Amino acid sequence: MEFCLTKKTRVLLISPTNGLYAGSPVRPKFQTHPLGLLYIASVLEGAGFEVGIYDAYSFGHTLGDIKAEVERFRPQIVGITAMTILAKDAYRTAETVKGIDASITVVMGGSHSTAMPDEALETGHIDISVIGEGEDTMHEISEAVERGDLDFSQINGIVFKRDGGFIRTPARARSEALDEIPFPAYHLLPSVSDYNPPPHWGKKGRFAAILTCRGCPYKCPFCSVTRDWGRKYRYRSPENVLDELEYLNKTYGVTYVSIRDSVFTLHKQRAIDICKGIVDRGLKITWNCNARVNEVSEELLSWMKKAGCKAIQYGIESGNDELLAQFKGVDKALITRAIDMTSKQGIESHGYFMFGLPGETKDTMKETMEFAKTLKLHSAGFTSVTPFPGSDLWDYCEDNDLILTRDWSKYDFKEKPPSRHKTLSPEDIYDAQKAAFRMFYLRPKVVLRFLKNVRRPNDLLNYFFGAMINLRKKKNV
Ligand code: B12
Ligand code: SF4
Picture 1: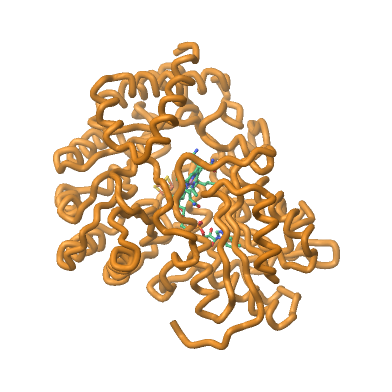
Picture 2: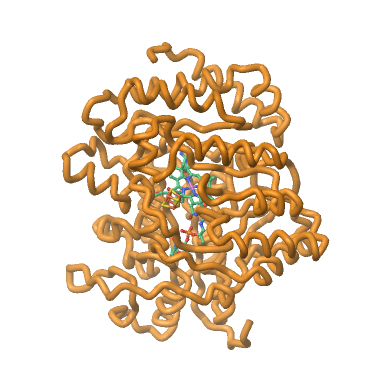
């Protein structure tokens, strides 16, 4: 980190609480470290700014708590992150910040502002929407505020307010030199280990999340990741990733890592080199990652196992070959082969499935349920297709007048879909989702395996109440 003089501008980065918009904040069942804010914080700290992180999302803080933190920290800039489901909570947070001091520059970033930058400015509480990666953009915004220069027109990758209108600056080139971005500023969190990942990410242990690449060359129509990160696959060198793993292990005693890359295995040799490095450095960690069924091989999986890989999450989506060909470019045989190979290595597989793709019928939904049961999956998630702004599916739904609501809190995969399907009713899709959960989980071997991964007593209560809700639903499919 280069030496810099301390600057006078203080920047507070906030992850808004889920449910603020609805008036009753909730601590989510599962949380991970807010990597986006941690990366931005490390760049700003390196440039000499005083930075704070307030992860209200993970700890379920109220608007009152956020207000108290803003009054205590007295920032000149507040940066708020939000994926789509948290957009309205982010707007409430911004309103609270402006209510304390209207001169604070309020910046919003993350998936939602990348897709819908104008919406944030229209609330009247946000000064700048950031599109895409935030490290350099937030650095330049902070330097501008430090200089007292509130004309942001020279900063690429933003939309900001001027003279009653919105100015959109040219797109920012995505960073290629990922090794040069400092490690996330984990030290700004109250505790690195007080995060509770979903059980299907694997075993217990002091946990941290890391990111080893950005971008995805695929273009699954329901996914907004390529809008956020681009289609070019950019990645950190194995050495840089290994240094971070070692740092987390030695500094924070982290023994369980979740690699949150969209697809960790895209560059197979790099993934193997990371695995070999974990073995060579004698790192005593276990970990999990996301992969695509067509992006794994026997050799890679065996290295992953040797290096401590405990679980892999695969986006399977459907059990119908036509839908799979259209939306994922894979087929059932390939999926079965990948899950078998994973199981053979002693690595757990979690399958993500979705109901309600365009062209889906009641029959294809049944095919999906049956297919899920045939696979050697340790666990599975069944969701309703959700058209996230920024995805091709969103454009399709908009063009065909299928969007039912812009209440972003409904974009959680779990409730009835926020969009209309051409032939299925929202109830058809919701019922299929619930039926699939019951069919998959109400098998004794699955229940036993799942319980082994419970991290704390509270999880058991969550599963119990979740199961009760599912069981009380009428079985329509
Ligand atoms: C880890 C993760 C989670 C964690 C929480 C993460 C957290 N604490 O923030 C958990 C498991 C809890 C989670 C839950 C959900 N998630 Co999630 N999650 C991810 C995942 C895998 C990694 C996020 C991450 O850390 N990325 C790495 C960091 C570095 O990137 P980033 O956050 O985008 O930040 C960069 C930029 O966006 C920008 N930026 C971000 N914030 C800000 C703020 C400012 C001020 C600025 C200037 C810039 C800026 O700069 C950052 C650095 O370049 C992503 C997929 C992915 N690979 O990105 C999905 C993803 C974000 N999740 C998604 C979804 C849909 C969900 C769920 C709704 C799914 C569900 N129903 O279970 C829930 C929501 C739960 C809820 N009720 O709120 C979608 C969001 C789509 C969308 N458009 O909103 C994603 C993109 C996955 C996908 N393929 O669709 N998730
Ligand atoms: S779903 Fe996964 S593979 Fe498909 S575009 Fe998104 S990140 Fe890439």
